Amino acid sequence: MQTSHVVVAPTTTRENFYVSMTRGAEGNFGYVAVDREDHEHSEPHPDDNPNVTARSVLYGVLQHVGAELSAHETITAEQEYWGSIAQLAAEYDTIAQAAQHDRWAALLAASGLTPDQVGDVLDSDAYGALSAELRHAEANHHDLDALLPRLVGARRLDDADDIASVLHARVARATVRPAGSGRTRKSPRLIVGLIPHASGQIADDMRQALDERRELIEARADAVLRGSLTDEAPWTADLGRKPRSEKQKAAWWRAARTIAAYRDRYGITDDRTPFGPDPESTSQKIDAIRARAALNRAHAITNDEQSAQQVRQTAAARPARSL
Image 1 (cartoon, helix red, strand yellow):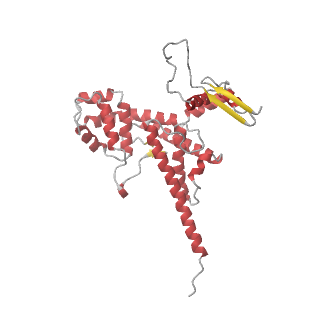
Image 2 (spheres, rainbow, N blue to C red):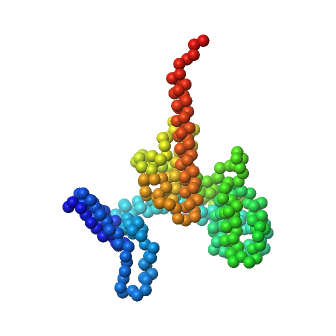
Image 3 (tube, one colour):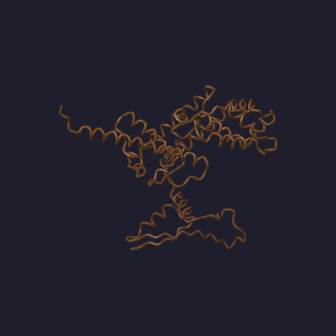
């Protein structure tokens, strides 16, 4: 067969798609069906996606495994999921929210809110987001004891439908950058460069659980980066050459590990670029900014060492001046 032509539908399995797209010796062509007309329904079916695109159909096909997994493959897949940074980070966030509940409740009570308003905030569906934002702010070295009363008093909250949502937005805007400026600005306290560290007074059992997740996240990020470098994954070429000096090598590894952690957290499988498709959620957009900053640091470290090496080589090649 010289060429292969196949119609790709949302129900196509990954295995069938692979076979169809590898049979032609000179060319393989896939025609993605985005028309899902169903004459049995006069109204749109709840499962229909009006915004379906060829790309989204192909993505679904690649996730649609038709063959049953073996017991070994099933165990491996489960271990991969539960050991991923996406899962570990979610566990860390959940534990942190519970561990810091009393602390944030005391902070809210001292911020100028009435007792009823504090109760409304703690009972709100948006409290989880607010709790995470407070942790982000503290990881950026903001003084929440001084900041939150100022944000509460900035504008009245009596007519707010959801005070927790309003406070979340105010905290996010006020703490988007780390506290301080210039040389006084400290680096954010982030696990693998992405996940805000939970600080403050925390019960011993909660602290142990958080520390265990942090260690697992760091080990996972190291393993993902090491595996990508060993396999020479194309995206690692963007990291530049690993430095030789131990100090710069450690800094380069930390920067590269952040990118590996980002890929693992958001399931990036595209090896052509470090960051994959454009992020959609707000949290991923923030992490993408952090990952791109890490890539810039890796480049700077590599360039600094190369410049220093060139200076040394030039000095060594320069003839000695006679006295």
